[in-house]
Image 1 (cartoon, rainbow, N blue to C red):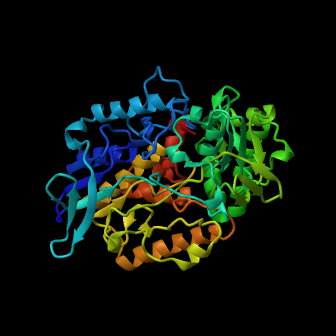
Image 2: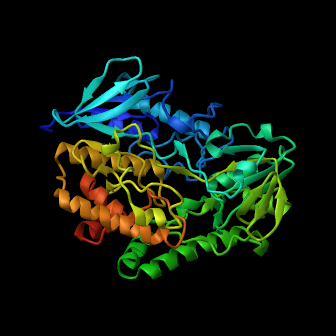
Image 3: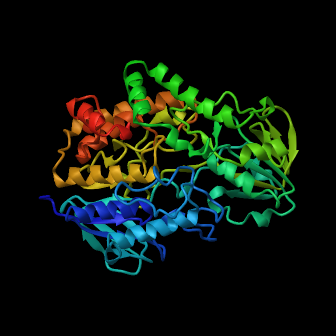
Length: 478
């Protein structure tokens, strides 16, 4: 740590809390900055339409057993499928358990983060406070801050209300209205269901299909059906026979869907996009809502003329409100453009139909700055099918162990080549279908992160002698 160990962590949601905790554990002098009056980020409901948050009715899509940090399980009296309030309480308890609060500054708005090329330090400009100097910075504001809107011909003529899911807080405000929900992901499904009993008509518009699975299958949380044995078989197939790996995962997910729901062809949920790039929708309510006709599945939007929305199949709807459940895009404008990984031009990515106007940040392993890997890191830019909090924990461990010097960085040219390969892979996917810029090959990324963080998990659950010994002694883990 010869370059200094003072670390600024920007954002105190789940990303920032686990980053701060890991920094402090390894004796970094870390300070967390949070613009709100609370920790926990989007897991605390707020009626403020300028802040991303859950709804009071939100239920987590993953079980508490797989949705917790690596060293802090949920309380035993919390159900496996947690409510948003229970996750909020869990994050508050996490801050208390690891004594993070003395190192957190709430109600503190960081305006600018810039690198001083002379001192090699990071300058943090804060509203109403003196400028501060840090050796390293972790940007933990996440990917869910800046709404992404689709381009729609004629949308400027629409006289009704338009709102992104970020600002969708009170379903009752749409009482008696004809509402079009755009997007059939988890937020789209949850939004459509929340409007039942309030809106007069609810349409959910989508251009692609989707797999829909319940939270519980045969009395067990849905994510408990996938064990280490399955992931190891999939890892082998992914490495040697990638198409077979995708086919296996598709068969499992489709089986879970078909065993629990009867999907009608008129809903146009098939074909669904590749599970390599798009997670299934986890919802107990959307399929029953479609069956009852409380929600109607319709085609994508073609154009808008006044209050009339013409769909791609030629049908015309009259609607009074549109709710965009179309995701977010990376926004690191808190950084100077020269240090912003999302500001680097990428014409091939931009031209891909699946990019949808979102930037593709140049980050090593989707975590470390290409230009300043030894002092600038980003949390929340990795996505694949796994428990989010465990993923965040592992990413934070990898960052800290790299900065500590326990896992040396590769040469700069190798870092750039690694980013180029990741971008080529992501762009190839985006040419065929919609894709999140944060998506990675989960098996490859986890192997790197485990190795970098020094967890030993890959050794004990792998095929080496330690793995075989562990399997013999602890077969329940398989």
